[in-house]
Length: 71
Image (cartoon, rainbow, N blue to C red; front, side):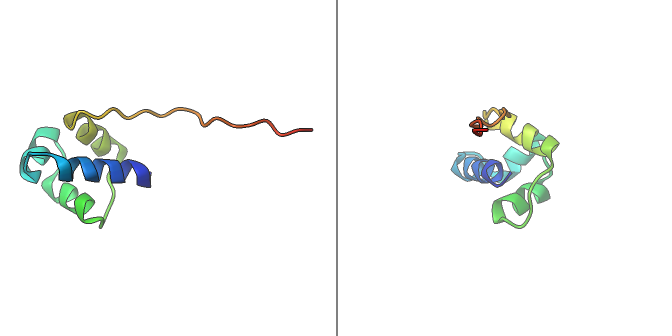
């Protein structure tokens, strides 16, 4: 989940919008957003989805490619 949070953090920091505007537009509490950007805390899956959607990001979960072990 660290990669996801880092990507969201960078997207917030790189945005031309204020954190207040991002929080309001995404429906994520400003305090949650502040803690995310500071690295203090993460986000719930629901908040991460709302934030990603607002920032124009798509969350994709797929199985890892695994190599078969020889028997």
